[in-house]
Length: 178
Length: 85
Image 1 (tube, one colour):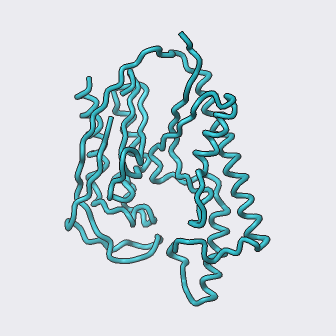
Image 2 (cartoon, rainbow over the protein chains, first blue to last red; image 1 turned 90 degrees about the vertical axis):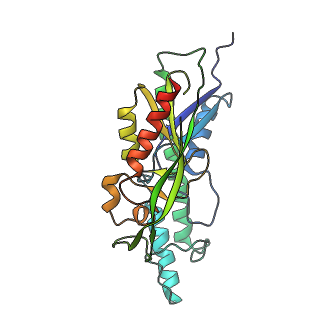
Image 3 (cartoon, rainbow over the protein chains, first blue to last red; image 1 turned 90 degrees about the horizontal axis):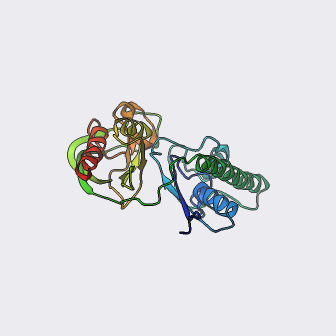
């Protein structure tokens, strides 16, 4: 029986938001990590990122997102629009030919790849320590839809002050699976 | 379940303390929580009960009433695990 490795499924809880300014599509850190792991194995295996519970987990380093955001805020302010407590989508407000913007975008790529390498190495480290390789495993699954009381927000703004909420007017659902 | 490895999944963006508590209560030594999986809930972010007081974007934009989702999700998955035994 061929016992060679075919895949690694790893779980990490972090928002994939290093590259995000809503003006490009990127695989971000998951892509950088999986690509790095797969490269290390000569692309003979598949490395699958699964998203952990990241609701409150941003990347530890993403200063450039704040710096680029400040540039956008200033650019919008020149046109009389205050976006300091909102996040309008689209690449508006960033001149990609501006040397500062260029440098920040480049830094972002470096950090994205660096985090991919660090996390990829950690995955490889855990893989080395797998002590009980299973040849056969039964797969079982079940799913259930859950519904919880909801609320509706009536004011605006990203944060820093209290949200005004209407309670008990709607229900929100999601599902859990095991 | 893959053998004795438990993957508890939720189709929303779950706050980390919910996963930490779930892993603590899981009867399986190797348990992980997978989120934003198998569809997309209309809840917005899913904070743990203790985090609901924070005035941050993720909490303010959550469409959930505080006090229900944390226990609901953990018990929901534990019940499914029990059923699959």
